[in-house]
Image (spheres, rainbow, N blue to C red):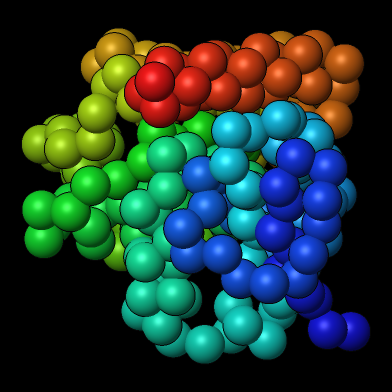
Amino acid sequence: MTTRAIAVNRATLTSEANPRAHTVYLQGRDDPPGGHPGNLVLEVAWPGSCYAPPLSSERLARPFQLQVDEIDPLFSCAVAVGFSWGAWLALAAAHQRLARGASIPRLLLLSPVLGRGGSGAAGLGFFAPRSRRIRHALGLDQGSRVFSLSRTTIIRGASDPQCLADDARVLQCLGFTLHTVEDAGHRLDTQAACHAIKTALAAHLTSGEAQDR
């Protein structure tokens, strides 16, 4: 099955790529852009278009650098929202831009893979590409933080094995805005999780409109 990109402008849907979009949404592996929680992102009346590039299994099988390079030019946008693996791609693209002195959008990371995760008791089933350098850039593992505390928001479920509680506690202590939804897992599909996501999206919408004025 071919996954198509979705560009959203208010209620208008097209399949055209829009590198100058106001908002970019990166979904999880093989999730349709309009599936949960992307449906909550795409229904927001953003002041400009919202673009969701396709993240099919075929595209994600390419070298990680190619994946990041595809996202990088999109991040001249005002807001980027990533879910699961899409959140890790968002962090990687933002970190790459920061390294060369380019601007990055406000980041809303939903159930982000934070470089490591899994389904076992220890939650250490895998390590993502660039895990060490990006974790350090977040201030994890005693790294030197480069991501903005005020422009990065994280929402995770309490039982999510891919966004570990230990990492969440460190990020919260560092000063990041981080919400843990007690009754939610990785999919963030409970009523409380949906409310948390909608609240964060509304905050990003308000801040974006203030910057546009």
